Image (tube, rainbow, N blue to C red; front, side, top):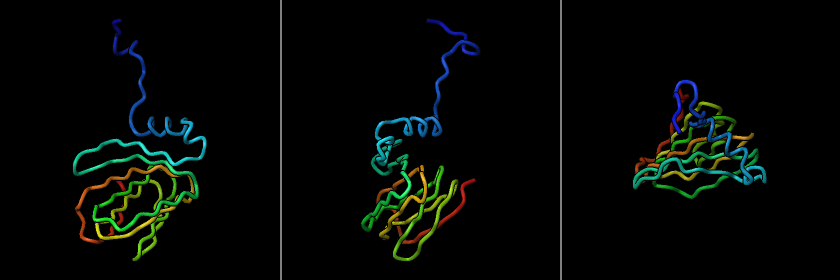
Length: 130
């Protein structure tokens, strides 16, 4: 079948907003489950889109990997042995290896988690996404 790409091509939703929309339509999400979708997996890096219902808590053990959280929507409370921070939409937070941490969703929250294997010096930083 041929299409005039400007006027007749089927519309395909793509990108993060479309993925979030699909997550929220899934049966797992409707049943109150945490939902994660791996966007990239390579030997040194993993990028995961994660959606949490309000009150969901994730606890990790100490990691040697660098972890980056980018909150797409919602609010997330991050806690480590050194500090506690509330992250809101468009905020990015980096946890370098050597830290034990946990986070709790304060409302329905979607974030991108990037894990870089074995790359950390034990520090934590926060910044607003542009």
